[in-house]
Length: 238
Length: 261
Image (tube, rainbow over all chains, first blue to last red; front, side):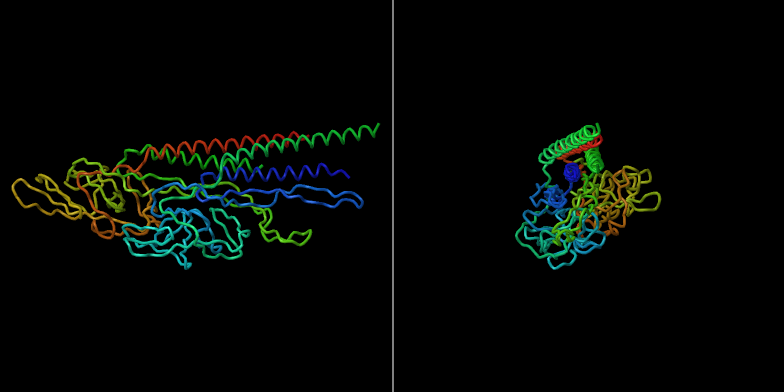
């Protein structure tokens, strides 16, 4: 039973997935509120024939989402909000409530605060936030309290998933969680800023070079295996 | 090798960002122009293994599963509604809006357009019109023998005559506001149309309903900040190069694959 080829194959396919994750991170290096995704390789053991040692393979399949703080960019927009610290904004989507860190909001034609995809932002009571059209100025305090011309409007709620491991990525910089959410009060909301993607291009490109070389090594290994087996066949076939 | 296509989405997103920046820089001196910013959002995630899947070998539940993203898409190009600075021109019909309102302009099609460009003129028939020659709503006619025009902060237009001391009230300028000014549809020539996203126009007298007041003899400069745009341009260019690097790496890995045998 010859298994070296299979082991190196699992490695190559894991590396291919990792390059895909790196490409997605680099592509989203300018996406507001984006959180870097990573893969972690784990060992996958497979039983062989009785009496033989087991076969260890590499499986690039544990997902990891970085929760590092992204850099804040001043935009000066009234409804551009950034979270400094942990926590997420809660938005209402057709698939249920979702969490996001992308805080560039805008009032819709009804005056409700929404994301760029048109989903309503929810306050700490889970209700939509209405901005009166005749409001001259809207201010947001660090604790999320919104006021229009000095009159309180609502308090934007920050939330954390009850089970941090249950965060499920969706397009539109959104996360869904099956375990429910709970309010969180340990972070500050900054008005007039947005949080950039927390992807660090340097680490991504460095990792990309490593992945590329590891992949080439795997390819070389496969070639040598091929030659070895050919050699065995030609020797035995003499 | 999906990485190739993913990096390509990254390159085209950065390209759109550069286009937005060049549009802003081109309009650095356009009266009443508001800078725009390209916004991005990630694309669909491929579920390699759903979270909560039961691991067949020993019955454990995968806590996170595997999801791989498929790139980036431009989600919007947003108008940054910052008040531009006012520069003094001393023109009788140069009017700047201090606040968030828009002048209403009658298009030949009968539709209304909205504009913050206050470089107004007097037409051959005495109407107050925009630089493009479209009449302002409500129509205000300036008599031929008027010596000068005075417009106060609340939009009342007075004419002074050589043979009279008392000025004559010619009319009242109004401003239009929207629930979502960012949702207006730009049609060029500094004009916007109402859209389903902006909500209906709320027309009212300057100084009420948070619409802002008028300043005669001033014009609103473009709100483009050159320093910021150039910084963004550097970022966008580097982002483009990084994505190109990923394409090169993916290409070399592909060629390694085809060299296995």
